[in-house]
Amino acid sequence: MTKKLLIFAVLITLSGNFFAQTTTLIGQELNAITTGVPFLTIAPDARSGAMGDAGVASSPDANSIHWNPAKYAFIEQDISLNLSYIPWLRNLVKDINFQNLSGSYRLDKNQTIAASLMYFSLGSIDFTNEFGDIIVPGYKPNEFSLDIAYALKLSKNMSGGIAFRYVHSNLTGGIPAGGSGTATKPGNAVAGDISMFYTKDVKLENKDGKFNFGLNISNLGSKISYSEDNYYDDFLPANLRIGASYTVELDEYNKITAMLDINKLLVPTPQLVVKDNDGNVIDTLGMDNNVSVPVGIFHSFYDAPGGFKEEMHELMYSAGFEYWYINQFAIRAGYFDEHGTKGNRKYFTMGIGVKLNVLNFDFAYVVPTAGRQNPLANTLRFTLGFNMANLNNANTVKKS
Image (tube, rainbow, N blue to C red; front, top):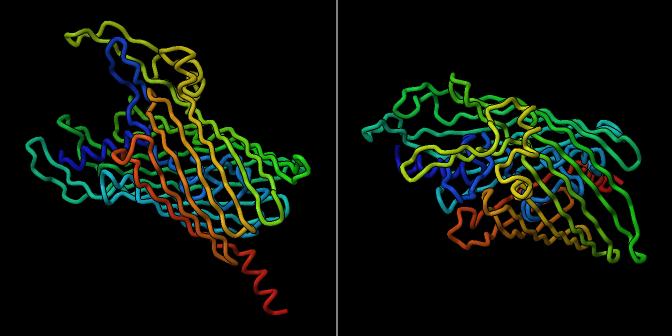
């Protein structure tokens, strides 16, 4: 296997790991939760990416299908469309990138439909045999998901949403795995989201404001497998996201928003296999994670080997801030925190947004707390948005 393929394995581990069992020594506490197709957890847009990956309760936009499909019921635009591009983990490999196309269409004042396509290209890899000879040069592994969503206003202040997702992951192109010669295949899976959104106008010290609350349970679906042997199928990154935001209008030109998201993967915690100095297994801590998806979701709330303390370590926090000037120029910042024993992703984010008559542009930049050697360092996000409602309004004004 080439050096680049080894780096590829590291990339996947950084975003969310592959397999469902780990080995540890007595006293070692590292025990990150593992899933397949971790690209489904990557923030696909620059706006939320600039706010610490917070978005379940932010104001609705074209990318709400990832964060909270229920938000679409309150989106202002009749038609919205966003295209995002992310050069991913460029500190390790220069040809990995993530692309996302999302859009929505309002059916009537209470109903909105949406769709998105996420494509993750993992660059070019040379596959070799056990002797180091290249057997497949320049293979380009890739993954994608295709989503559709529906949102409905349930009352003046509340909405519900659902989404359905097809996932395809082709990492090996059918090349036999390792020295075992086990045939591989592209992985396919289906999943769905269930979400709700609450929004209400409020006043704080005579300042107009808006309070939002959101909840999204995402990626509930089948497991995914890369071989005919389905014994160790991987869980999808099922996730519970809950959060709130508050926006205050300082005056007719300025408004600020603060938000907080809390995430928990609804996936079993890996068992810890304890070995002695000679490598002999002496104990296994935790619960068996070779279970069905419904059982795995249920187990995810109490199966950590370290008990309640470790369960709390599995929570991820995203805090974000957004400032708008005359609804045309935005400055954003945020922070993402994951416990050191569960992946240790900790980074600040920042970005800007510009809203023109028809087009919107958003930019985000990641600053890991570990410095520039972190694989996430120098991660950029670019999003270009198209607002059909504003185009229609512009045409109306021009004709008049």
